[in-house]
Image: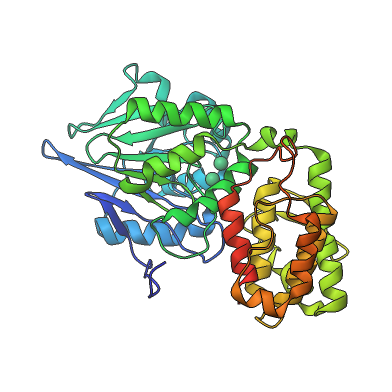
Length: 403
Ligand SMILES: [Fe+2]
Ligand SMILES: [Fe+2]
């Protein structure tokens, strides 16, 4: 996070002759669009990558005009896959530029043609037999299919000169801050987005392996949602993404464990409501309501959590980090006791459920007493089938327990 709010009202040159021309809505789920200008051999060739959703059209068009001037011309649109948030503005741009051509995969074309795009101006990625688009300026773009990530015809685009990889939805994510560039904490947003929209880890693994094999030196990952990833964090995010369970993988999570977590969350809510302050519960549940740009991570019915849309570990982190933000220092000791009891009741073990701190000995002996009674024993092997990132949970609980 930067101390002052960055200004994204204009285009941002993310690499030489590559501009971010997207919109920022300050919702959790932002869309990106990119303009690439090729210059060479006495020619100029303008490419728009993933032209975006219709509410962003005016802003995208204005930003392109700021880069190219009022009498600009677009030559080509590249579409990663068929979703309207990626493609629909192509229709409006094609009305302005009747000769505008479209490169996308055959699978994607079979669907995007129903938006009303011109068939004669479609060029299939499969037609480039070398897997590369050779632009008349002398530049080259490499086509890297990413099947089932998330559409079977999805295809990433790699700019060989500027070493920028345009990945569509891959590496897209929810955002907490307006910053265009990712820091490590962007991972939580990537994780949630991929767990909901990507069908299986196999697809992620294949895509990441192919990126590694085919574009070893990439300097920027430019996805269609969220933040742009710079060179120093590319390996960090690729390593995490290729081992992330998503979509159908999560259906293997034990039903009992999911239900136990939901029951523990709701016990915590019941007890906070009864013994601490009911407004904490309503504020917490309100914070889980999506701003409409993305599905809710928790399904809430009758003021309690009914089901989870994300993996249990992600839900756990979200629940406690939001709760932590809401509590006053005075409320924390009482809530800490409630949490320890409820997690123990539902056999939810973290490595250190209640880290000791100097204040807790004096202020809240009852919480410590409960731990003495055996709640802090490590779970037997096999009792924790979920891959909790224990350090992160410890930090989270540290934060919650601290004053
Ligand atoms: Fe999509
Ligand atoms: Fe998308």
